[in-house]
Amino acid sequence: MGFIKRKNKKFDYQPRYYKGDGNPYELKGKFDEYRTTVGKSKSLKGKLNAALDEFKNSKNGGFNPTILILVGVLTLIFLFIIDFDLSIFLLKN
Image 1 (cartoon, rainbow, N blue to C red):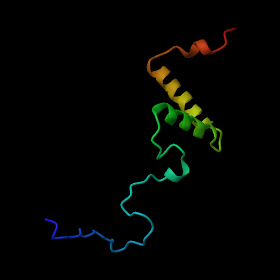
Image 2 (spheres, one colour):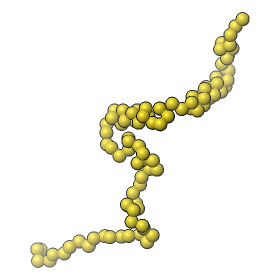
Image 3 (cartoon, rainbow, N blue to C red):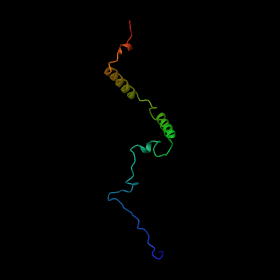
Image 4 (cartoon, one colour):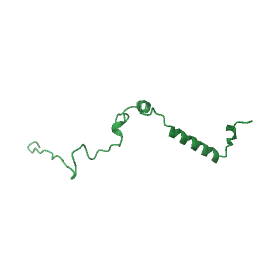
């Protein structure tokens, strides 16, 4: 039926309060523009290597003393709960 030539109507919906900055329906993370591991379809090894490189090249060098203190406190609490004898860590006279 080539004698009826119809063009498809294009759907051009604009939200009422849309300012025109990009796609309003795009789902994006809060810190995606600052990370190098987001948005690239790599293999698992490539993602892991990129994440390690980003971790090493961060501002604080990838070292967070707060995490180490938290892990230490939680470890001591766990040892106390299982009734571990902590006297082996003390010096004997």
